[in-house]
Image 1 (spheres, rainbow, N blue to C red):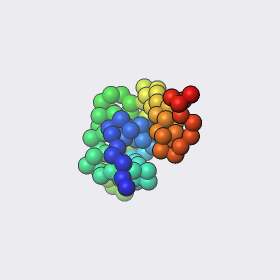
Image 2 (cartoon, rainbow, N blue to C red; image 1 turned 60 degrees about the vertical axis):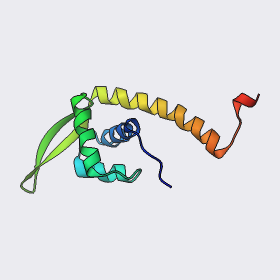
Image 3 (cartoon, rainbow, N blue to C red; image 1 turned 135 degrees about the vertical axis):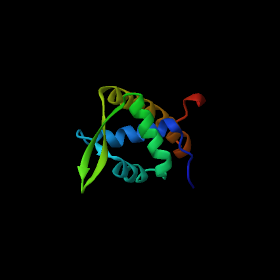
Image 4 (cartoon, rainbow, N blue to C red; image 1 turned 90 degrees about the horizontal axis):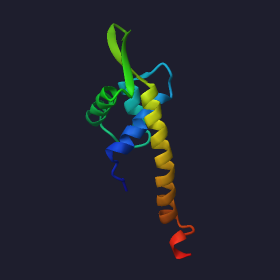
Length: 110
């Protein structure tokens, strides 16, 4: 069974992946890292990268690799702030969902 992934969750995952390397990382590597958690196509991912760049969550630079330019994405201070917000929200959200799906104490029954 596959759960539908909303754009906010995808943004959070992409920000987390890019934040792992202080020097930044490139699109194909980002795609592979994101795919280790959720199924996503490159045609879905690249617009996310461009939007997060426009929103100043990333800065980019190009680096020549084997005669070709490779675009690198590096998280900004604004991107780190957004990622931290997503992490707090995810902890709250996933805890509530896990409580329902996996069982546990239900505060409404007290």
